Structure formats: structure tokens, C-alpha cells
Image 1 (tube, rainbow, N blue to C red):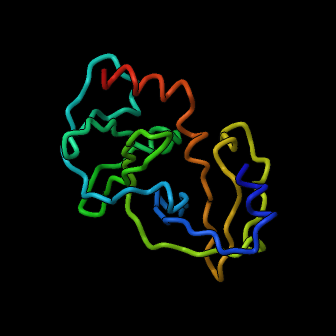
Image 2: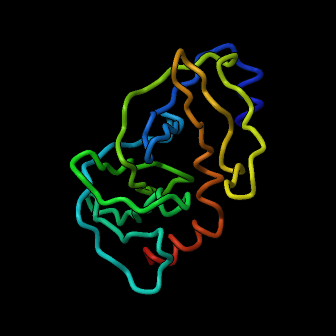
Length: 160
């Protein structure tokens, strides 16, 4: 779906760039509702480790996931740069904890390279491509695919 959009459009594609460790990732800007400082979450029993808990966002219960855990990266303590990106996915709000956000980037379709086929250690199903700009390489994520139907079913169960 995203690859077709990239190939068939001459318009710039906009992504919010965020960091996890030493890597920079991008998520479609149209999926982003807001960016918030990390705050204490209400933990829930019997949920997968990547689900940190929930927050009450103006009356809406929002599940919070830790992207480091979701991507099987080394654990990292939260600091003053840690933020939650609140996303609107399939008419649901979901927050994802990241190490920081840098900026909104605009890419022309020719700046997006296909995702390489890497080792079994890295699941590339969630990567739509690599954005190349000057000295930066941004891993472009398919956030809807990342929040698979299994995960969405978990979120439905959490907020019921």
C-alpha cells in the first residue's frame, strides 16, 4: 500500500522523525495526533511487556506501548527527552514511547529506497522503506502493520 503511494505520487511525503537508540525512524505525519512528555502510566496486569499501561487523555483511555520493547531493542531508562507520540490508527488512539523526536521530514518519492531484506533478527514487515536525505537515513515504518490485528485486539480488551 505505502509502496504504491510512493511510486504513483509526485507529491512530497511527510514523516515525523523519532529516535530509538542510535537509529532514526519515521511515521506518517497524518497518523500523529500529538506529542506529549512521558508521564507515569497506569499499569495493567497480564499484558505483554511492550504495553506499558494506559493514560487518560482528556477522557479517552489510551494504551501506551514502548517501541524499544516492541522492536526488541536494548532497554533504556526514560529521561527528559523521552516522549509519547499519540497516534490515530483505525479510529483508535495509541501512544508509543520513543527516545525522542527530531523533526518533520519531507521526502520526494525518489528519496525513498526499498527496505533491505535483512537477517531474521530484524522483522522488516513493519518497514516500508528507507528515507535518504543528505547524511541521514530514516527507517520508515508502517505503523498500522506494526500495530497488528493481534495487538489491536489486545488494546480493545484493555480499554473495555
